[in-house]
Amino acid sequence: MRIVRVRHERKSIERMKRLHLVISGRVQGVGFRYFCYEEAQRLGLTGYARNRPDGTVEAEVQGEEEALHAFKKAVEKGPRAARVSEIQNNEIEVQTNEKAFSIS
Image 1 (cartoon, rainbow, N blue to C red):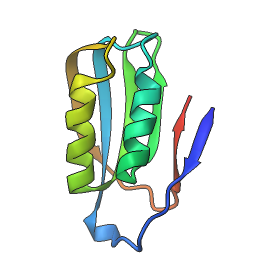
Image 2 (tube, one colour; image 1 turned 30 degrees about the vertical axis):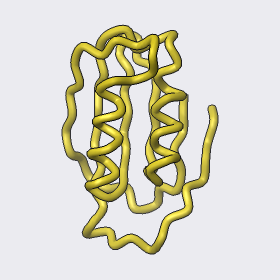
Image 3 (tube, rainbow, N blue to C red; image 1 turned 90 degrees about the vertical axis):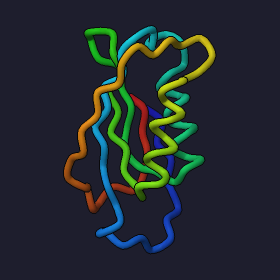
Image 4 (cartoon, rainbow, N blue to C red; image 1 turned 90 degrees about the horizontal axis):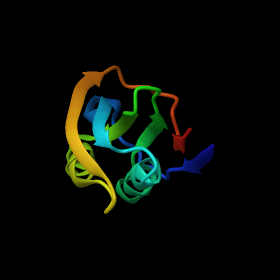
C-alpha cells in the first residue's frame, strides 16, 4: 500500500466534501489506481482507491468541491489503457482525521 501525505492549507470543514465512486469498465490491470493516486496528489485530495472483486475500482476522495470535480473529470477518461464505461458516485460523510491518499 502506498500512502502520500497531502499538505493542506487550513481548509474549512464546511467547504470539504467526500465522494464515494465505483468505476466500471476496463479499469483493473491498466494502472487505474495509480492514476487516481497521481490525480489526488496533484489536486490535494485525500482518500483511497482499491480494486474490487467484481472488476471495478472503488475510490473515496475528499477535498474542496472544485478539486473533486476535476478529479471526477480526470477519472472519466482514466489512464490511456483504461476504458471507463460507468461511474457511480455518491456524496458521503467527510472524514475529519484523514491526511493522505492511499492505494490498496
